[in-house]
Image 1 (spheres, rainbow, N blue to C red):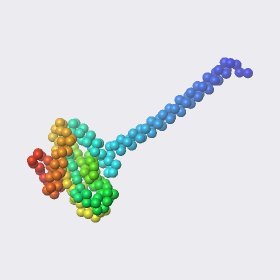
Image 2 (image 1 turned 180 degrees about the vertical axis):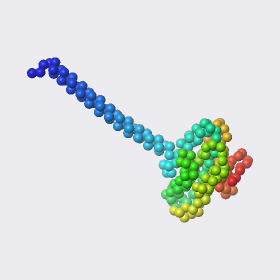
Image 3 (image 1 turned 90 degrees about the horizontal axis):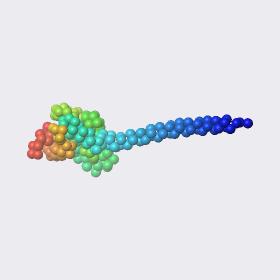
Image 4 (image 1 turned 90 degrees about the vertical axis):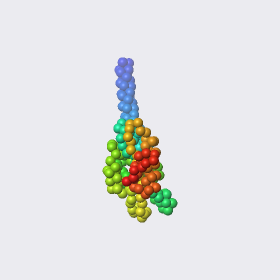
Length: 209
């Protein structure tokens, strides 16, 4: 027969083994749960950061990034792009065709300026922030090479074009909203004058290229 001491020792050993097993099991389970949560967080962060239709930056991500860049450097050029006659594409070919056109147009901008510098505000309105001192010749070259200002769309078989309004950041104290309003006014002038790009300079004066 086992003595009381041996029985107690065996019970303690069994409890210790069970405790170690449960500890290891819980630790593995917690690690798996943490990895699952981290994966979900990354997916959510990606969904928040990037526009779900085009893959370029979302409105919020673009605004936050540009605001941070302005504060840090006080330099850069904000560009707003808008497809001319886009409503007619939706009305004639349907919204799915319009979405496909937006994807193709977005791809052109992304190749010209980079994914992390390009954002979609909504509809057919896109924004780009070119960091550093404004180089108008370089910007115009990028726009022309990308084909966004004038292009033939094979899917809709339409000759399409877009306009761009630009506003220069001149100080770390500049605000994104103010820069956007200036670029938007320049965009209106570009459309009015059928110009590929217009630079905002003041309330009364625009410089066109």
